[in-house]
Image (cartoon, rainbow, N blue to C red):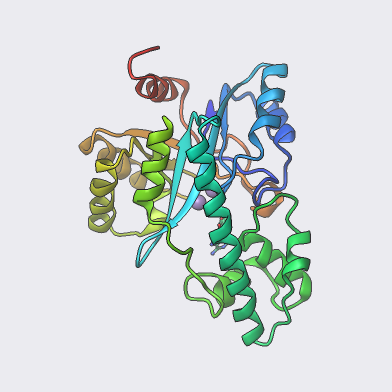
Length: 279
Ligand code: AMP
Ligand code: MN
Ligand code: MN
């Protein structure tokens, strides 16, 4: 694809540095890309610099982890304004919530008889964000499980014994904070939130009220009929379509930058919508 709007770096739970991501995107012939690390913008400056240097269009992005009573919801933001103090403070709150949650996950793992050590886990995360993927790698390395999948199935996933939902961060709050920042806001991988059309469409209606602009209808694990369905959903709510690979380097085998995404003409619509006719 020409444009990949969903990519992680070592600033969260990817394994490529921001520079490496930019170089790889260029090598693969992409026209534009966004870096969307979980709850952090730490990778943006380095990526932006490299992108300018080698000549590829770069979008400052983020993927914010939220939760409702029943579901994990990820909200993507694009064209972020990093000068916005209120926004940067909200990111600090998110970091605190994540750190708190990580402490609780460690406690739960201990209760399962696994002698988990947060400092050891932190060593496996090059950036400031420690995600469940780092926990999964840790559990594999420790020999507590044989694979990352088993780590999520048994412990870290929604039905796992050490599952802790992200606290106090409803998707409405993320959409609002991004919208107030001037960002373009999209609902990440809707099918992974909940594979139920009525529930997701209801959620979308509510998020549109607080500023949602798009749906990530083009996603690697979606079938052609899923894509068609989410594109229709987008249309019904006057939303645009976003798409991306959700690249995590070695932390997500078999997924490369640009495997999934959108065309440059789809991307142009997003830019135009975000500029509010100023382009
Ligand atoms: P967190 O932000 O701490 O909730 O962790 C989210 C990370 O865990 C993301 O990178 C997801 O891709 C990954 N993840 C969530 N569920 C699974 C799963 N069942 N198998 C593998 N990775 C997962
Ligand atoms: Mn996600
Ligand atoms: Mn992601």
